[in-house]
Length: 68
Image (cartoon, rainbow, N blue to C red; front, side, top):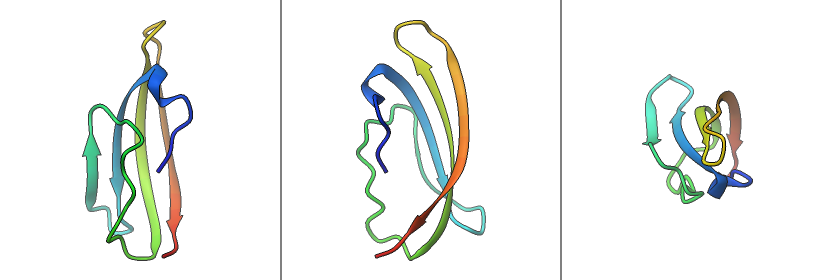
């Protein structure tokens, strides 16, 4: 799971499986999660990014599909 310009933001990331179970959470994401061991399927994320320069906060949510 890669986020462009992640080094310019303080990123809080949560990833859930299709049943709504939290499978990953971090308060300072650094593009280090690779979903090893994840089953094929759809996953959902909630992401809060705070700019290290301006302090502006933006929330994102969406889905991603894993194919092994």
